[in-house]
Image (cartoon, rainbow, N blue to C red; front, side, top):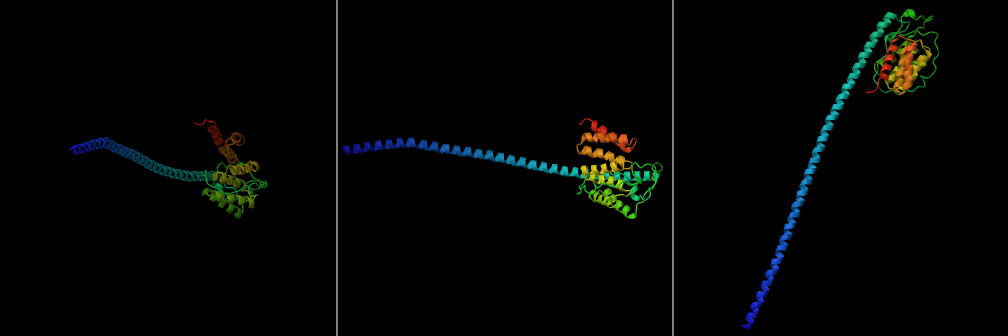
Amino acid sequence: MVLSRNYLATCSVAALMAATLFGFIFPVQAQDTRLSLADRVSRLEQQAQANQANASTVNQISELQQQNAQLQGKIEELQHQLQTMQDSGKSQYVDLDTRLGRLEGNRAGTAPGAGPAAASAATSPTPASADSTTDDMMAPPPQPASVTPVGGRGAAPAAATKAPTPQAVDPAQQAAYNAAFTALRGGDFASSAKGFKDFLTKYPDSPLAPNAYYWLGESYYGATNYSVALEAFKRLVGHWPTSEKAPDALLKMGYCQQLLKQQNEAVATLKSVSVKYPGSKAASLAAERLRRMQQPAN
């Protein structure tokens, strides 16, 4: 009986200890489980926020790409419109200048051997590219005994231009001159520059030489090669100051100097147009350019 009671007491104590130990362990395990779930939920929330941020960034990039494509399309459209306007303006200007040249040529009379190119006037060329040098152009041209004016803008009446021994232009010279001038009117500045250079090299004493130098300068001017154009115009003004093209050449010298950022030289040259050639169309254009140059920039 005594042993039986001791056994029961021992069992009771063991059961009590086991229950106590289980009661402490289970809450700790449950708490650890709850903390782990909270961490997982937090991580999922962070991932969801990151995904939303990425989606927003992707949408912004897509919108920017669409805007860029629209702007590129507008730029191309504006470029096309600008090119169309330039081409149209050039054609209209050349046509008007040609008609004016013919009217003036009919009024003044045609110089001997002047040919079809005599009725043309200065074009307003569109910039292009030309691959040329100044070596041939810089060769000193001989001074002709007399220069037969070639008609065009600013041509003087025939009665006012008395050349004692007018020189005729042979067909080969006229053909070479006309070919270069046709290239210029067509906007092919590289070909026209080469054509006029070759003409001046082959026929340096031609009565058409002053005009050839002028159109050579116009060819380089149209090709935006202003420094070489300036030298061509200088050569004309220096060697043929009484040529019909001298006032326009002096005017274009001022234009070139302005475009080359030689402002003081440009102002002096443009002022000299009115002094040397008063009452000419070039003088009025020079005065207008000076007026615009003196206006403050907006």
